[in-house]
Amino acid sequence: MNYWIELGLGSDVFVMNSLIAMYSKCKRVDIAVEIFENFRGKWIHGHVIRYSLENSVFVMTALVDMYAKFGGVHAAKKLFSMTDEQHVITWNVVIDGTWELLEKMLMGFKPNDVTFQCILSACSHSGLSLLHQHEP
Image (cartoon, rainbow, N blue to C red; front, side, top):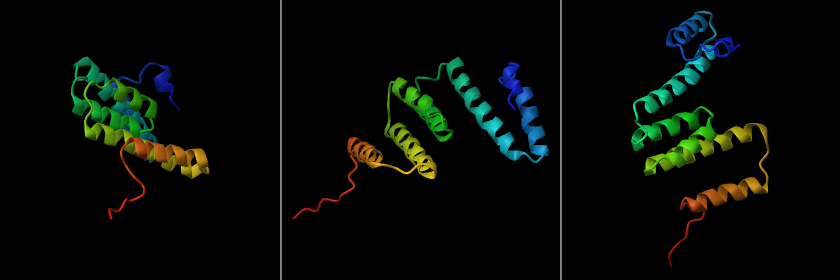
């Protein structure tokens, strides 16, 4: 299905737009969306690099968010670690991407005790508490 990538056409805007239009007209919106998401993300990342926008915490947070939402958690984590300045929003994006991974895991796998330990550890490291402490 990804012949355009094998031919080196994956970065050609005209080819990608034509493929998106073709799949949409053939009622294969699922494929059109997949092409769009994979193309738009890489294109935007390339644009950020070409125009030296890596120093903007907001631009980098948007990239981390994009990769995390489209399943590129490795890329999201790598960009997160490369970001010089991290903002609470950047942390929220990474945590949200991690929770999305957990939800995907639950669709196909039954969590075990280590899974729950990892969740509790992540909550603990981020300052969250699953138990409410009451003052006397």
